[in-house]
Length: 112
Image (tube, rainbow, N blue to C red; front, side, top):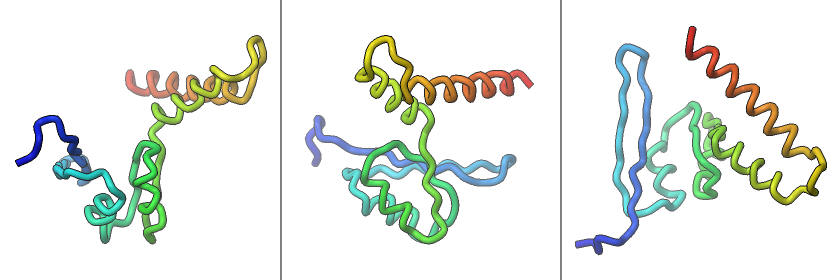
């Protein structure tokens, strides 16, 4: 039996054609890189993840393209903006402006 305060993870995979979506949930007691490597052992395609280093090994698998989640990317630029000199426009501002444009396009397309 596991301690009720111990950590565990739910790994979620989604796939399938639009009319027959498949969502697979895998419960594990580890977030180590061996878990996604095992779950996606013969997978070829895109994998969207956060910035956790445990996913780095996936990108080394032939046929796997790792994608970044824009919410996590945006958060990194928000953090960078906090440490840039006050009153100066920096690279973080430029990146955040581009991300905001993308979010605007996404909002427009949701209404189509």
